[in-house]
Length: 210
Image (cartoon, rainbow, N blue to C red; front, side, top):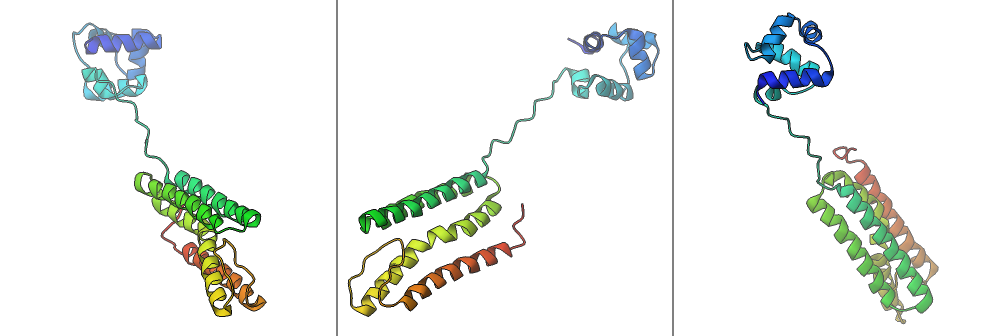
């Protein structure tokens, strides 16, 4: 199909006559007839008008080259991975606490840490292959500082409290009331303060915007 055939094809597809096309382009009917019979070709200005009117590219009119459809961006969104990781971390801390309440065993800590390790792994996979990495990382840590820090802080507190009081201690996902109510409350105060401080620092980072 040459240029003459393409003009004729597009005109007939529109369902208009040569005279109607001539009015749209600003030429005579004879000019359109000559284009379609290969007696002449439109100048570049007319090609651009034809392109706009028929909603095709100039390359298609001149050479028959059809434009390639836009290929959607297939890069995954890192925020989806961060959300999935956050869910895993939340499940991890909940399961760890439930197992501890039910069994009173250090296995609860292991279960919680394994699930949260999986959550963090999912997040970092998103950071490796996805887009929106900075914003997803910011909000991931703003939310997950509350889950990721609880078990380590609890285990460290229970160990130190047990050694100082010379009494039996165990790893658990929650601080245990050992030597005194004051030290127990200080542990929770430290945990909450650390999480709030981290969130404030991350929220003030103006370089990370939606």
